[in-house]
Structures are given as structure tokens and as C-alpha cells.
Image 1: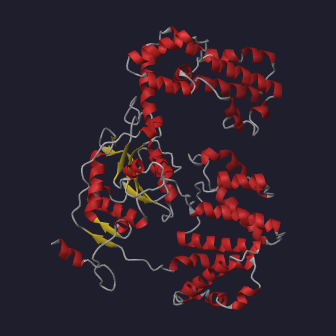
Image 2: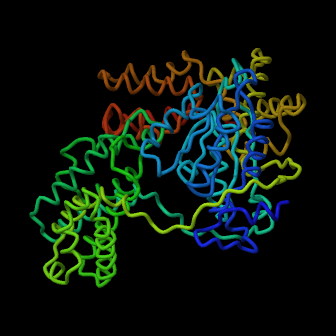
Image 3: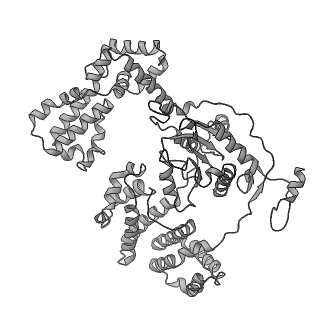
Length: 555
């Protein structure tokens, strides 16, 4: 029966029926309905639910390629037509509005609730509500695999209702990645490819530098700066990814910052700003790929690199491929240019400005060139995903396992609010070794911690520091830390606000690392942080007071 079905499949235009298909081709161009349906059924049945158990929690499915991801979404819509077009969505670089979908996915109650992704959500995405991860592709980079697993380790309070925090997440691994890494513990990671948007940004920064070094006075330099400035202006400072580089983004959203880009500025653009989500519309993937081709050619031309000849041949091939589509009106308008590119004369006095003209005129035609690809084949043979096996992941213990420990410890603190040692922690009074020994004994006796767990805490600052981070510091005690300092100095409005920020941090977090005085929100008052608000002597005194307050939680 299945042999007849196999022979009936439309494998290719020549009608050739293969005797076998390699495993690497599965989910690359050969897609089996029953396989995908069973994976989705397993997810929808065994995945962690929210909304009182009525809805699957936020889920990321890591697919092999865009075609595979599209097929997964199609099978979901076929199996759950009442959720069609909303619940599960494709999110990858082939989708022009991908960032909008990511923003929607980041909202707890908003669809999509399943993000089927290729590379775009593997790293750098921080959605605390994610509780299910589905590996539907093989990963051979240990670092990348654990970064992908890290999408589920973000803490999330009240996810399942008031006081019911996220304490775990599930990894559904259908491609034996865990088995591979367990059997190959010394596997090394290859270099990870950067997204094309990030590569374009970096290439344009390099082009600016090369143009300046070349002494260029053309409008191209101004245009490239303006183009990057517009991209940075499209970065939403409230976006959770952009927020991490807020200071640099704000810096380059100011037009004056682009007047002179020294080494420090270029490093900030390349290392901190490049690749951040932006609302700037830059066309589809084909147009971006053509942009990157021209940008690389411009850079090699400015540097006098012999490798320019290789890119020249690619541009000529591109023009030849478009010429064959001269029956398309938009292509016909550029036919003269396409024919000229294919002549030797055109390249004799080529300049970066001429290449820029080529890029602008032809980039939107790139998507008309259809690459010759193997036809996708869809089968519907019965498959079996086998029995599921539960595996704990100690590598992510610092994530949700710590959340569970913190939750239990908070309840312990509430139950023993009259304990003298806990009151000393809350009031910022100096702890003794006997205090910490007694608290450790109580945590062990009530089954909240074990000796190994307490030893790990000791390596992370100690039990007292950990408990202080949960209790916070009493506001009266936090204010008292700076009472003498405030009395001895006539504080300005900015200085008073800076001290208030420290007090708020102590009340909320229990301890404050003085390093944060050079980060937001402290740098919101002055770019130099504490040194821009206080004198050197005053800054040293504040840091001393904070460190002494922190140390009261350590015996």
C-alpha cells in the first residue's frame, strides 16, 4: 500500500522516483504530514498550559528552514481551524513584519501563542512567559543549543495566577539533540552566522570608515550615515532587546552623533547597536542580499582588493538573470542598465557611486529572480514519535530551579517574620556567623535547602546576601544610611534624586552593586553616572556607605 503511495508522489518534473531519501532531506524538502501532526498533538497534549489550563502557554518551535516552518503552521491550521492564522505564526527573516509578530508574541494574552521560528528566536529574545520549547531541528553547536534552551529560563511571576509563578518549562526534543551532546561532550562550536540585517548595518559602518579614509567628498557618505540614522531612529527604546543598549541607541538617535564617527563611535555601533530590532522598512530578503553584495563590492573597491573581481562576476550574473525577464515592465525600464553592466567598458572606470546607483535601481527587482530549488515533496505516511522520556536539565538549574528555591524561601521568610536574624537582615543590622548558621539549619530542617545548595549560595555571595535580596532593606534603614551624608552636604535636586534611586534599589533588592551607578537608571541623570552628579570625594563616600550596608548581610 505504502509502495503504491510512494510511486504516486510527484517527486520532480522528470518523474524520477527515488529508491531512498537521506535522513538529512527530511524537513528540508521532504515533509511528512503525519510526523508534523503527531509532534503538534504531543505538544498540545503535554505542553504546559496557562489561563486555568485552557490555553497552551507561550511556545517556540525551532524549525529546520522556512519551508519547514511554513509547513508546520499549515498543519497546525489544518488540525486547529478555529485557531487558524492567529494561534501559531511563522516568525523568521522571510516575514517582512516579523518584529511586529515578536512584539505580539511578547504580550502574555496576545496571539500568537506558538512562534514557529528559523534562527530568529534562537537567541536574544527575552519572553518570560515561554514555557514550552520544541526542537524540530538538529543543532550541533553546544553553545547555541543551550542558548536556545535559555529562551525558557526567564522568570515570570503570577504566570498561572496570583502567587503562582513560573517554576519550570518543558523542552520537547524530537531530534535527539540531548542524546548527541551527552554522547559527544567535547563537541566544539563553529562560528555562528550573524543575521543579514546586522551584517548590512556593520557593512555600512565599515563603508563610512572606508569613505572617510579615502577622503571622499561625495554625497554617498552623507546618504549612508542618514540611512543608518533612520534605522536607529526606528529602534523602540521600550523594546526589551533595545533597552539593553539604551544608552548607545539614544546616543545615535541624535543626528549630531553622526557628524564625526571616531573609533569609539564605530565600535559602539557595531558591538551594541547593529542587529537591534527596528521599525525601519528595508524590503524583503532578496533586496537585502543584493544590498549586501553591492556593499561588499564597494568596500573591496575602496580597498583595492583583488577579490572585487569575484563580486563583479556575481553582479554581472545578476544583471544577466534580470535581462531574461525583460518582459516584466519594471525590468524593461532598467534594460539599458542591465545590458551595460554586462559589458567590459562599464567596469573600466567603476566607482562606489556608480555601484550605489546600481544598488538603488535594481534592489527591488531582486525578488523577481527565482533561484532554482529542489521541489518540496509532501508525504502522508504513518509515523511514530516513540514513547516520551523525561530528562532533567541541570545546565538550566540557575534559571527556573532557582525560581522554585526563591519561592519556597519567600514563604519561609513570611512564616518566620519574627525571627531575630531575619529582622536584622531586613533592618540592615550586622549578622553574626551564629545567625547564618541558625538560618541555614532552619532551611535544611524545613526541606527548603540542602547542604549542597547552601554551599552553592556561599559561592554566589552567601546566604545572608541571598536572603537580603528577598527581604529587601527597610526604607527607614535605607534612609538612615545616607542621613549623615545628606546633612553634611547641600544636595542639589539631581543629587537628591540620585540618592533616592539608591534607597529605592536597596529597598527593592536588599543590596546594590556600586557598578550600577554607571548604568541606567543612574545614567539617566547624567551620562557619567555618579561621577557626573557628585564630586570625586562625595562619590567615594557614597560607594563606601553602600558597600558597608551590603556587608551587614554577611558575617
